[in-house]
Image (cartoon, rainbow, N blue to C red):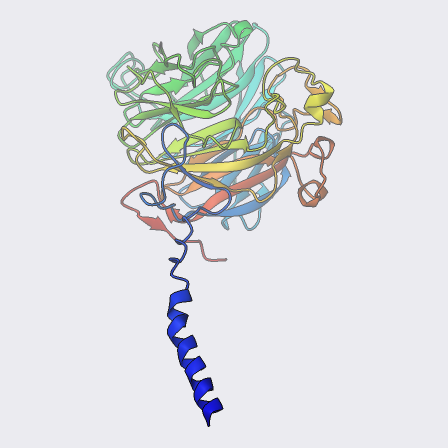
Length: 494
């Protein structure tokens, strides 16, 4: 009996002391919210913003394999929903949202070319396929029936040698200069058609009054090509008729016409960290209120932007960084805009480019030393959205879209001899493209340099990354660049 009492007493004592030894340490705080790998929310300096204040946009992108080589691609979408991907001598069309593609160039427009360009007029639906013929003549084709039939005409660029870097675009007529009420009393075609190219003397631009059949008015607007001024980006025309062309010069510059190409003036950005010595082409987009957004790859290899709210008369002199600071090397930036402040940008970027400048998108020597060729650099395709790009402190939502690299190793931008171990590293050539359709859905055309075993292998090298497969990403679901449309849903399979 005494043993039982003693046992009960010990148990009671243990119970009374248990509270004294209880762990009163508070539980650890919940982990800080993080973004998925390859998703970034950044401010105008490229630095990450707090997830307590900003949430990522719901962006879903769909991939389509065009099935043909497609370096230097152009892309456009007609009002019927047909996508046109133009590169080399091919005009690839998909009318089932990228599920299948066919070449519709036809014998009239299927020429071997050194520098192709494509454009879809968003007002008239006319599709242009421009092909360079040798060094003096271009062949300009167009179709008004979604590529079923084509009309083609040559454009002789004259006796000055080297017709290169050809670009074409369309835009509204203005009330001065070459527009209605200006030097000419009427316009033959609903929109003005602009055609630019570079020669040794510089940039030449012409205006067509008959929808691109002839180009008899225009001439030299900027030079010299020998200082890279003749190399230029795409042509952009705003809703108010202002036209923009971007030369390749030491400080980002925009050449502007407000009279349909009769006269031109140029405006430069500031010389802050983002602006000196832009790499290759810079680009301009304009929104529905004719605000302009100029982007380029800056001195530190990030993507930068300057804005103009007065039709190109003045521009911000301090540039805004669009690409995240984690993306330390970029190339081929492209942009389009919808409503004010709503823009989308694409570019190739690397998060593992070496501090020894082994990204090799610029610098000397262009022929590539061994350390360039062996650099373990992986370039992916990125797409960046901003829905408040005109705000004093805009927010940028970036997604690393491609699941595997678009290029491993260096990307050479020089037009001369670009070679490293494993062959030419100029397989991607000069640019990609981005445009939106009438719903504000984003479409991106690019050339994929790392396909098949290069994309799936764990030890792929620059020598494996020499493809140029024509490829497309488009917004499956997410915000339209037109505010009234709201969120876009995915296409239904056909």
